[in-house]
Image: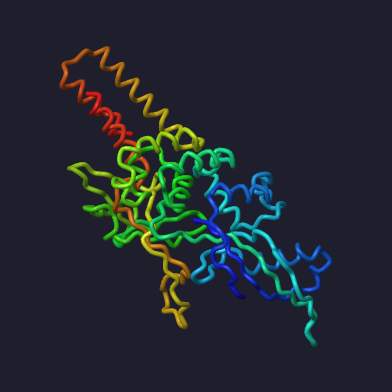
Length: 205
Length: 163
């Protein structure tokens, strides 16, 4: 789920923070530049782990700031395909589910990757919202958004930045995870706690 | 920007959590004074509710040692540490071709994982207590009522379905 990545970057350090120790100043600049942003094919930047080397300090003619080249390690959020992650439901509509990790919210579970067979039922309280229900052996298991949901990473995409965005479209997401719930052990955690319990009791009887 | 090394090593959830704690994320209740960005607090809030919150270097080290004999891939071990499965069915999805590779050893692996890795403190603990409580009340009902066998079976199944 989390990886370290080594990155080299040339950055401008404005003079007002040069009164601080150089590593602190550069770290602050790097955090301002990278934190909570997605680098294509590398993932979401979580935190600057450490700074390996700092070189330069050149002041370009006509520029009132020093330019440094820093090599640093960053903690990245980059799930691998097949990984199991727990998340919470954010939205549930006719197309499927949208899950959230708190710090990352572009996780979609399309209807065809929900447990098979499932069907949606309209939510009486909210328009456009539905509740997905898994029919298993005549019993109904509801994805109600209360509990934690385990999903398997089906794919991770980094869509190219659009030149022009149509009006009233969703905000652009630089990293989109497609999740799957269609396997044993996935879905709301309570489904499986209950299942195990029922099995044991069947054996006891 | 130049990417020198895209993958300089994976981190487990508990390692990221420890890193954020070492930056002071857990100490500052106002969340203003510590040198931690708001986005880092979001990660911290997520991790503190997962199984990672009580894991330590020693726990995980012990788990890695005991894991060696199962011949699992690194990613699978990492995933088990992050999720801390407590039932066999949760492991099936983590490990590829689980039946073929592990067979009967799955139960053993689950038992070992739950033993070595500490319990996440909040929700799962209360869930287990609830189940136990349900079980107890179900048992009591059985003793008190002494109904015929068919009804007993029905009431036995109840806690599993409701929980």
